[in-house]
Length: 420
Image (cartoon, rainbow, N blue to C red):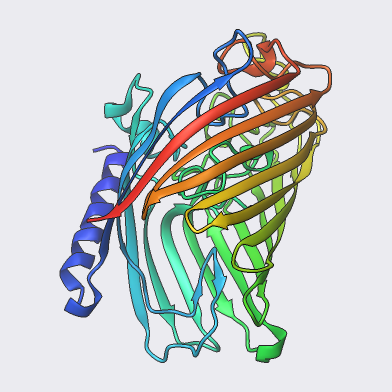
């Protein structure tokens, strides 16, 4: 039995034990989400990357059909999310979550999903993006923990597009450059502060790098954050960080994409990324969120051969940074207007699929809930690039063979969420 199969069996055994020991008053919930959409650009090419992110081709996509089994612990703080108002529970509690998915939103966990033979040669994949235990302890003002495989806490689009609902069908450049999920442990502590100063928490995690179950080195990666919520809970500030040695082994770059750096003498190569998010709800219908990010990858000394695109291996210290502003107006109870403006710079061509340069984007959409849990969303996006490459159109998947410096993308998606 290979390691991926073993991990899957262990996960289902954990789930079975959890279900068997749940008290009648604390049974888990069973939810399903189905999302599909259609997307097109304005060029002769069918390639909509990077605007479409995991959707590379024009046409109709089944993003996901998933089943989510969850029991949430009774807690006043959650790792990756932050503190909540109210008195701290006095009793310990525990929970778990298991997500099963089929579809094209396939952010792979290396060492698990990529080893499932049922996915060989397929565009729509079977995945287990999240499987974890969680718990609460009545320490200080409240302490919560999570252990297993879970979506990252870094950035504004937490886990998106793998965990909707999100404000937009397409995704920011900040998300294209950040990790999607981790395997490891993380804890969060609510700090004792006077209520008029708001709610504060700190978090610390130890994980297997970016999107890995099996890491290609023996060094773990550190996650740490600080979160503040105003006393009225309308203003949020999140400062999130990830730092660790993420160097590739020669020939094993799948584990460290989209940033590949190799040292011929085994030197450790640092990667870090930082995110600051400030959001504010003005009233019941109007809110904004501003996200700024900075990333750094230490360069190696090995260059890629001619079969790879330029910059596939990072040979100099590389940086990427940018900001995106998200504005929402829920002008009717069942309808919301969204607008996103972003600026992003890859200073040295760090991303394996994108050339160095400045990326600018504007996205607008209308979210319309036909009924509870059923949303349709038309969206229009414009991207412009300044630099020596051509990242839009052309061949898939590598946009180093692109044809355009700008791209219009139109999409329409439907998401249906319901409880079973």
